[in-house]
Image (cartoon, rainbow, N blue to C red):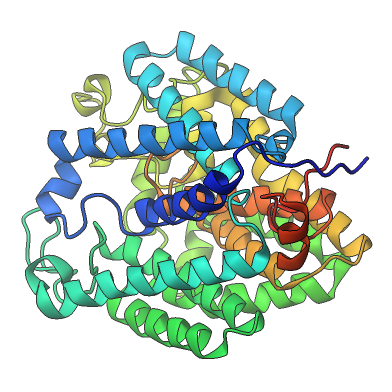
Length: 444
C-alpha cells in the first residue's frame, strides 16, 4: 500500500532537510578535523575525538527530530525485523565482550551511524535536489583536498614519519588522515561524478571525475586505482546480465577471500598467489589473518565484542606471537573482524545484510524496471565496499567514510526496490519531503 502524507514541519523542514544533508555529507567527507597530523591520526587525539563525538551526536539528534516529524519515517532502519535482530545480537555480544565498557561505547556510536545513514537519503525533496547537493558537497571536498596538497603540503602530502617510514613519502592525502582513505574517497567521488553526468550535470560531473581520478592517481593507492576501472566494468556486466549477478557478488567475495585469507592459512594457495607475481602476504596481512584464525577459535560464538580485541592490552602484550600481528589496529579484512567481534552468528547476519539483501533488492529493481542512474551509483559503491572487505576492515568502523557510504548505498537500493520514485514537481505539489531516493512514504 502506498500513502502520501504531509509533513508537520512545513517550511522549517524545507530548510532543515538540505542543510542537515550537507552537514552529514561534509561531516563524513571533510570531517571536523581536516589536515590532521599523521602521528595524531594514528595515535588519536582526545580533543578531536570529543569534537567528533559531539558532531555525530548533534547530527543524530537533528536526524531524529527530522524523521519523527517526516512522512517517510516508516522507511528508516529497514527491513525493520532484520535490523532489530542485528541490533539485539550486537547487544548480546556487548554483554559478553572482553572489554564491555569499550563495546558499549562502540555500540552507541554504531547506532548513531546507522540512524544517520538511514535518514541521509530521506532528506532531499527529490533526486534533482539530491544531485545538486551531492555536486556542491563533492566540489567542497575536492577544494579541501587540493588546498591541502598545494597550500598545506606538510599535512596534505605524506612526509617521512617514524610510523610510516619512506614508503609513502610524496603520496597525496589532502585533508584525509591517510593516503589510502583519500584513495577510497576519490574512487567513490569518481562514481558520484559519473552519476551527476548521467543526471544532466555534465560539466560538473566530468569536472568531479577528472579532479577525483587525478587525485586518486597521486595518492599512490594502487589497489583503489586499479579497482576504479574494475568496478565500472563489473558493475556494467552486473547490470546487463542478470544471471551473473549472484555469481559476481557472492562468487567474487568468496574467491577474493579464498585467495587472500586462504593464502595465509593454506600453503598451496600461498604458492599459487606467489607464482602469479603477487605478494602472497598482502603487505604482511597474512600474519594478522593467521593470528586471527587462532583467536577466533577461542571465542567462536559470542566473539570479543565491538572493538573488544585489537589494540586491547591482552593482545598488545601478547608474547606468544613472534610477529607484528598483535600490534595491528584491525584485522584488515571485514569478514575476519566480523568473526572476531561478533562471532559466527554476527558473521552470518553481516553476510545477509551486506551481501544477500542488496542482491534481492537489485533483482527486484530490475524485475520492476526501475533501473535508473541512481541505482547504478548505489551498485558501484556497494560493489566497491563488498570487494574492499577482503583487504580492509569496514563493518561498524566509527567515522569510516567507506562504511557510511556502503550503508547508504544498501539503504538506497532498498528504497528503490520498494518505493515509487517522485519528481521535484510532485514533491512541491504534495508538500512531502520524501524524495528519490527517499521516494514517497511507502508502507508495504
